Image (cartoon, rainbow, N blue to C red; front, side, top):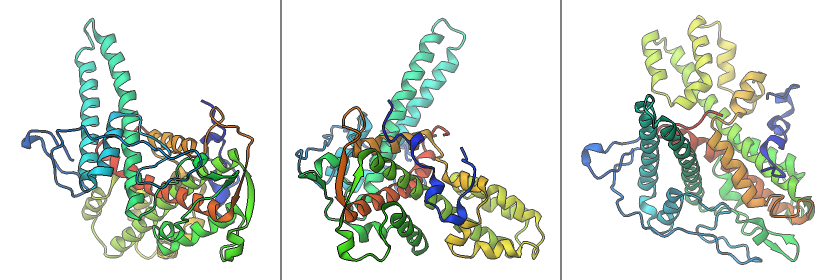
Length: 396
């Protein structure tokens, strides 16, 4: 489906980075089963709990056409799989056990997919090999749709922890041809980020909506016109920017740790053991840099070590094109699909809406959308890292 603001047509991420960072070329467990012996724990630290009764009612958005409803589960993207619908019900009616249920669903999906792949391997020389391969393909598609729903519900839960509801479909937030999103929740959305990240987020907001960082209340409530496709591209690009900032800040923190480890003169064996304890997603970002640190005698890399301890902005500005691309690139196909599906559900696409429609809105509402998108990208990075420890996602 050719959506009007498909990710491949969105502005490249570097257009929203500080000018010094821009580059000239386009870098293109739990097992909650019935048997106690099958139970295991995930790195989240939650204990196992059995979920045998999955008959929890699913939740659908039900706002009127002209009412911007911020009810508890009025997300723009509705779950399309049984696990997603199950988790939406758990989040509404049994919130205290949501993490257990989500971990259970991830483990079930991983086990189902592994069992299907195993059957294909066993039957490779039999007359039924073609049938099992076809079953495996269908199971892979089913599991991918389900794991995307699980990731979405986990992101929704992260927003709910900050008491920030996701903006529902924009068609439900338009009053007399004007889009207005209330309450703004700007403070809550900004509190998600560290001080250094927040400074870059505010610069991004100012750049993409054309509003000064220290703008007055009057400026915030001034109106502007924006085409629906451009609003969609702005939202999707802001998700990617939030994802990039989370990736870059995590890399920065880890390199600071590696610098301290290096300064303590740990031997190679202990150093490698330290690396093994790191989450695979974070380790992959800096593993090459870590090996370089081991080969540089202490004292000769002081300039680089001092850069690691500087603020995030200076650190990001020092990225070469390869590093910039590595931090900006989505790691999984599931994450890429989720961004596009969520953005299309929120804004609308050319098959459900008139694409050249001009929306009148306030700068305050635009700021709310951009802040939400950046937070969504940051949460997506965390959720992707967590899910990949249980259910291996597809490389993007």
